[in-house]
Image (cartoon, rainbow over all chains, first blue to last red; front, side, top):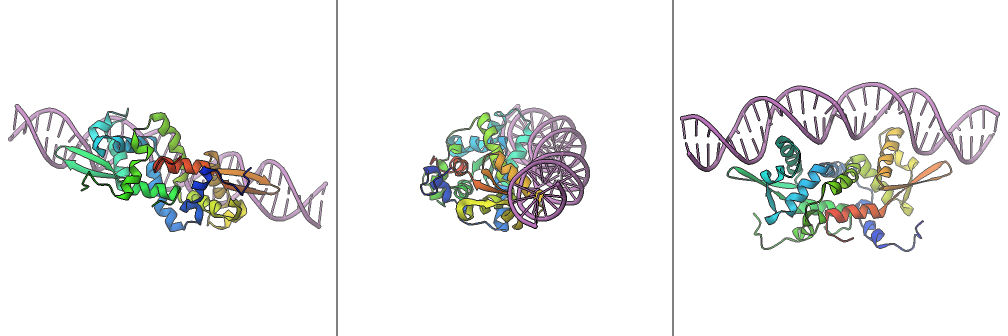
Length: 118
Length: 118
DNA sequence: TCCTGACATCGACGTTCATCTATGTCAGGA
DNA sequence: TCCTGACATAGATGAACGTCGATGTCAGGA
């Protein structure tokens, strides 16, 4: 299929991935997998996207609940998962709780899969 | 915490993520999650890395089996998962089966999380 | 033609996960 | 001081997942 001499742009990007440059260790894999697992759920993907795209970069739980046909404890559970792996930061202000995307963590993940921007 | 006016390099990258630029749809989340789920396993992460970093960009199953303390059917199962979501291409030559990383798929994922290269 | 070796499929088993209802905690207002 | 509303925690349940041993398929060599 591929000419093995010329690379498409998409191949050029992917070839620079740390994941492709050399085999990762078992320890590395064990540390990375939980991050990806936290992301590997449609609800959590939308939660992260909702928080990240929200005005001021933060969102109140009350706003997030309304975006899903799921119970409040379920949303709370998913937010906790994202918070525990470090993808979401949590801050309580009065009665409300605000979540914010941890840009560094997300960027690290992206750099791992794609080009080594870091 | 953050000054909200100045961005660290890492925030600059992450802010351009398609995931952060606007809320993704339920359909998008449903399509992306299986890809991430396929990746969200230490064994499959190492498999992908082993194949991608292998000479000629492809690896025989027999090579991969030796890298793990797992049964041959288990490795075969994980390779199937990665193949089914399109992250690995499969080619049988004689008695041996060779796997190859689908650079486009991996790049798409990276672009989704990080900067919008694409 | 039969045997061996490479890889996939099958069926089973224990664990993890997503979701729910019920309940707890705690801040702010009446 | 009590009530309400926002959010978290606890416990239960069914589905999905990772792993295994046993078995199937099939190409190549003797």
